[in-house]
Length: 360
Image (tube, rainbow, N blue to C red):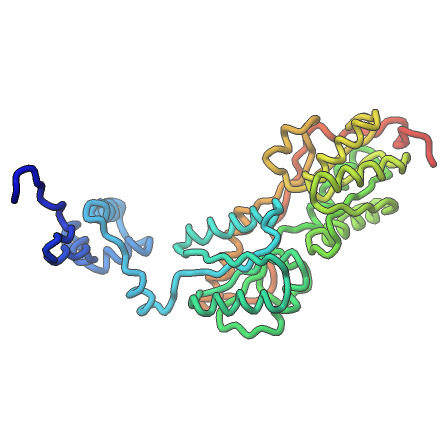
């Protein structure tokens, strides 16, 4: 070796073509840890019947050797790719985006890689292409994030030899799934306002072709009907703050309204601005309840009363449904995740016996 040269690092391939040192295998881990092959396998698969000290020795050996599991060989034995396909759309919106994160996190925790196909438009052709792509990847199951009923209609005509779980499909669907209980969330919002004394409660909905928006409308109607009140004012928004602002301006034309349930926090931001620009006050003149509990909601002016959705729990329930079907234990139907009310500063008892402004 010439002066100034250094030997190649251990395990590297020399320029002369010398063979590369082989990567560590499970037998090397077992030998270093002083345990059997089976014990190493149990540690890798998080089996409960391994003592803490043994698990620590095996994990230390894995780290020291830089052992990596041969997933290709393992899939030949288990006949599983450890990959879940997720068919998603509308992920620019807070709800779908956080549902996707919840599913992805739950997949990682279960030892699965998540492959995502994000649709630009919901058509039969795009859905069939995504499903074909997942089949080519040999995914073990497919999770459908379903904000539109059209997706369910298309899936009804698609034959897929792996479990399919629909997230947020709504009541009455035939697929196994997991959903946040949108009707319950809407009822919590309206019942809170009724409990404060409001009797004229409007609703600003999301686009009605969204399943979540339709379910929240039904929950608003159910809560009012149960209290003997009328669902008088229903305005439509588009999930964004600008549409909430425009709906808020329309809302102020209904002077008998003392409270409004808004279908998401982004639209509620627009409503707050519309009320402020009109020289009125929240909650003194009108109470506002949002939906989602976005991280910014507690920093609105005033801080927003809203409905919180547990997207992490939704992701866990979804992965449980997939794994149960893979293990032959899955049934049909839908698991519901309950939302909860977060009370802040945008709701209060109505002024002037529920009619702060002269009636039209």
